[in-house]
Length: 161
Image (cartoon, rainbow, N blue to C red):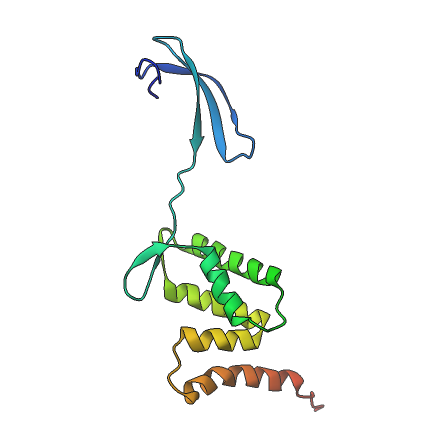
């Protein structure tokens, strides 16, 4: 580490401790040439996650955009905002865990649809219709079939043998 005063790279660490929130290490150093004491911080380098869009453009991942899309799909539906915020956080967390530097927008869309399917089926279908760019009613019905079948199976009475 170069001394801020004499610019020499000749120092020693006098004290080292964790910063208040644990995300950095605070070091007190002393220059062995001019005896200046100064403080440095060591942090993990944060590489931002980038989203690769359909066009090939790369943009920074923003949880707020994910949340905004989910909120739009849930407009006028009985979905609690805190639930949407937790769902958006789960999407972000999975993206950071499973992808190192870049994630395709299609992956994010699929994760959002998984979350919305759990929260509200109408919101799920709304989001899917925009995300998958349905061209006609048959595509819409194809998306609804699994939902309707799972509802029918859940409400069907069990038959005794």
